[in-house]
Length: 86
Image 1 (spheres, one colour):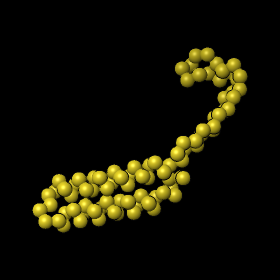
Image 2 (cartoon, helix red, strand yellow):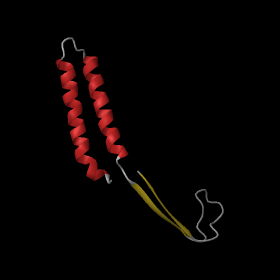
Image 3 (spheres, helix red, strand yellow):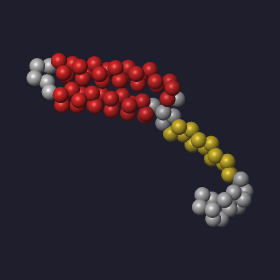
Image 4 (tube, one colour):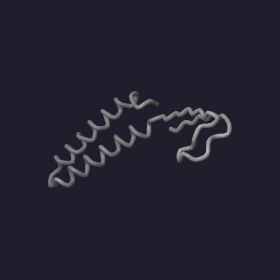
């Protein structure tokens, strides 16, 4: 899916991360490290979920005579390619 479509789940994931860290801090004997650990884990999980929801699609055209990336030999013929990753 486009990342824009996943933005609301990122927002709710970040909110959940802050809520979870606040709950960790409310526990008796909680340390600052416990709060930071809970927040870091929650933010990491939310961002990871957001990023893996991306759908990447490419479309490439190759023209005859086009130089390669290193400036070496040119392409002898035309071609095309497509790909996607989710």
